[in-house]
Length: 245
Image (cartoon, rainbow, N blue to C red; front, side, top):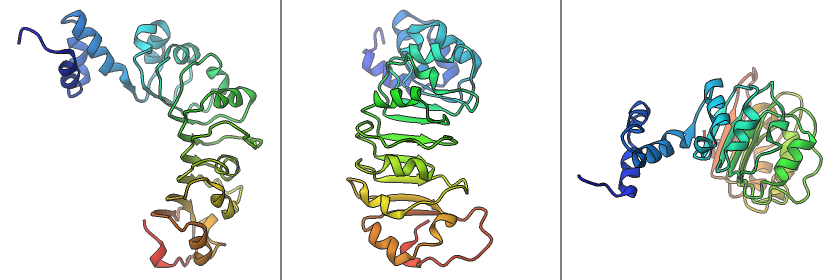
């Protein structure tokens, strides 16, 4: 073909291997631009070299829509600042802190982190009104009540102390409770969501003291229940009609 419509080219490039996308970047300016959009759209397990590249090139960084890394390096804050079009972010960097988000302007749909609750994290979350999915693990420190931010949250994955803050007054329909054996949860908090809970992932340690009939009244619209027995050495009776693994 002497020419390919750009929208058709983008569809084709979506099925091309990453190694070949790098080669196609050398074909022409149009191929380069479209190939880079696909190549940098979703970055999983970004290492130091990727982070350095995104910190040095705003052109490449603005093409990123989804970014995930476990690495913390000096250029991480600059790379995140450059990713102005980012929509999904997963920062499982245990040695980093929320200050890397201070200069970020993107509006996320999904955010996962392992930060402790600080003023920097509070300010960042307060700017994320479009956020629908939030995961926080190893988030040391008990967060204060969230008054007005994260109004559109529908999916929560967190420890009980965070779940107590994130569920009330928001349209949460999916919850995963991360049990670190240091906290318990009052199941009545699930009734405070403005939407019915439809998916729940929880552990035996938290489910054990609660009867199945009581759970059924709390979750009348539940469609999927995952019960994690990891680390439990005793038998636990759960009504079989209510359990779907």
